[in-house]
Structure formats: structure tokens, C-alpha cells
Image (cartoon, rainbow, N blue to C red; front, top):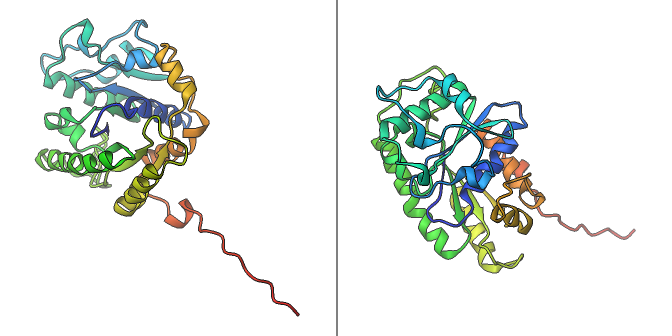
Length: 277
């Protein structure tokens, strides 16, 4: 579940790049757009004209959609099924239709990555509220201030959601619901910031101090990728500047157990003086 306390940080792009990285790990992955305020996942990926269903085409009068049937009707992007939100094509789906779509995708895919924008859908879809949360936050004083209230919103949504049936491993296998995993916070450098911006460095240190192993970053803006997206060419690959963060995020989603901090951060080198004989 991908959310952000504010717009313009590249949340949908981050989700798509993460999907690319996960799909290379022999894991079947689907992408879903649950940002009913915004939408446009298909446009960002450059597949808006491909045949297939969008959220506007969902029909679940009994609150159920068969997983394989839905998968078969969705457009593909890089071997991933995509359920996009295209508000210009029709009305938004009802809550039970959105919930049925989440369950259907989880039935027929190993992993489902969902872009929920600022998290509005979490208030009404328990499966989204209980899923592992990935929060993209701008590395600025404003971004760090906003993330506090956003994390409180996520916590409230999870606490209000009905408890899923227990299973032997603590997770709900049929919908991919996580147990009590803390949110992963991905720090994104503000657009237009210099490579060595002091403010973003301070914000990243603050994020690491507060979230520890759950803080990843910094994710830097790639001009070539931005140009491709603005020109409607989609995302061709994960840019080199973002590869390390995206790969680490993909690893953490596939295997939620965090690696030891010593393995993730190299200790600073210390100079040793040679003794004179």
C-alpha cells in the first residue's frame, strides 16, 4: 500500500518502479490505482489506450469478483496486470466494488501494489488499511512535519479495521494482509534541490533517527525519467539514481524481515597510524 502525506512526490512512479523490481524476482505482481482523487496510473505507464478494464468498468453487485476472470480482462505493463483509475471515462466505483477488486487481485497474484494517494480509501477498505504501508515523504521540513499526522491517520485506519482471521504465520494469506509491520518510509528529495542540499540531508537524518530500519532513501529525481513521463512514454526502466533505493524497497516488500543495520550501512572508515620501528 503506497501513500503520501502530500502530492507531487512521485508516489505513483515509485510504486511502478517497485513493481518493475519485484517482477524480476519471479513474483507475480499487479498494480492497482486506488487514488480516487487523482488516478491516471494508465497514463503514467503509457498504456491508457490499451484494451482492458479500469475501475470505471467494475461490476460487483454481490460484492464479489472472480480473481482469474479480472486478471484476464486487465491490460498488462511489463508482464504486470494493471487496474487503473480513469475518472474521465465514468463514475468512481462503489466501496464494495473497490473492496471486491482488491480481494480478486490478491487471489490471482502473489503481490498487489496499490497507490492510495493520501490514504482516503483506507478509511473504508479494511484490506488496504491492514496491508503493509509504504509512505513516500518529501525530505524537507514541511514533509517531515506532514508525515507525523499522516502516520497517525494510517494507525487510526488500521485500528478501526476489523481484525482479520488469524493464520499460522500471522498473516492473512488470501488478501496479503500484513500482521503488525511498521510503515516503510521512503525519503524523496524535493524537486529542484541541489545534489548536496543541506535541508534534505537534515531531513533524511531526522527520518533515520525516527524510523530507524524502516527509513529508506534518498530517492532522487531523474530528469530523463521525468521527461519520458511528461511526454507520455511511460517508465522504460528504473534509473540508476533510484535503483539502490527501489531494489531495497522491493526486497523489503517481498521479505518484510529487515536486514541488520550493519549490513545496510557501511561504517565510516577510520585511519590508523603506522607505528614507526
